Amino acid sequence: MTAPEPPLALLAEITHRCPQQCPYCSNPLELNRASDELDTETWLRVLAEAADMGVLQVHFSGGEPTVRKDLEQLVRRAAEVGLYANLITAGVLLDEARITALTEAGLEHVQLSFDDSEERGADRIGNLAGGHRKKIEVARLVRKAGLPLTLNFVMHRHNLHHLEDMIDLAVELDAHRVEVAHVQYYGWALMNRAALMPTRQQLDDAAAIVERARERLKGVLVFDHVIPDYYARRPKACMGGWGRRFVNISPSGKVLPCHAAETITGLDFASVRERSLKDIWESSEAFQRFRGTGWMPEPCRSCDQREIDWGGCRCQAFALTGNAANTDPACEFSAHHAELFALAEAESGAAPPPFIYRRIGAAVQGGDGARRDDETVESRAGARARRPVALP
Image 1 (cartoon, one colour):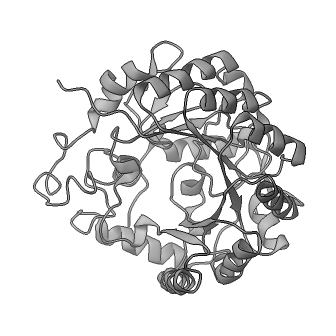
Image 2 (tube, helix red, strand yellow):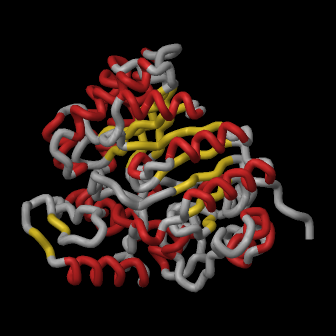
């Protein structure tokens, strides 16, 4: 069997800890604690292994990666082995000294998330008082340090009406790129789908806003625009195809084809604690299960897009149908496609329920201010992660 080409990028999820509690987070519902995380030496080894494989980029993410005190060491190792180092952060723990240290260690780019254009809405979504002000401060410090800056705007029904103002904020903060990314419904976002789902009109309005801004700000801002699959006609090539161009390592060391893959029950994901990254990428059963086209059922198997979208998202197929090998319901040829549209329209047309905030351990508080006992929320979350979400 011919070995697969190496991945282009590694997403290093070095922690699940985070001071924010965003309800749209795609981290798994069962979050790793600090005691579960890979130690510094293991991450240093894995970064060298990634470079030896031919990986070109490492994206340090979480949770909030700046929680880890060894982040500078990891960035330095990435630079030493020739990996382009990008930091994906909420920014709320950064200050000028830390940004300077990371820059000197070899950091080459920062992606900074924003939840709204105005403080009240942003802090409610992230459930962190003062978070929005801190992000603005950090964005300016990143540019002062000379690093290129991308702003990640995670869009949903609670902030889409401020999209134009958010784009103006990106210009004000001298960002190079903006990612207008509508929520993708995995992990905590799936738990909060009814609270987050926008209407089709909101999506159409957002698309028009992005296109106008793209033309108006040509040469000033680069735009990426990601719409939710629930309103799509064809699936995206999720991560460029399962096990093709992208690899993810969880805080505990599991090697995944994408950050949501652990939601698929029945797949055993190997760990860098026991095996090399190269061995897992090339020969582990989980990576081979949906790599290429041989696994595809009809209508995917005979579709002329099969080596373009690679069957869409396996995690979404599992979440919505209970079988990861089914055609992605985002595809118009899926037997579940019409039901997916109906579900999106029903949830977006109803009053949004309170948020269930992402949190490790302690009680979870909804957007209505009501605190929910952990056992209730965790059992509810776990149950939803283990079973398909019923389509109407």
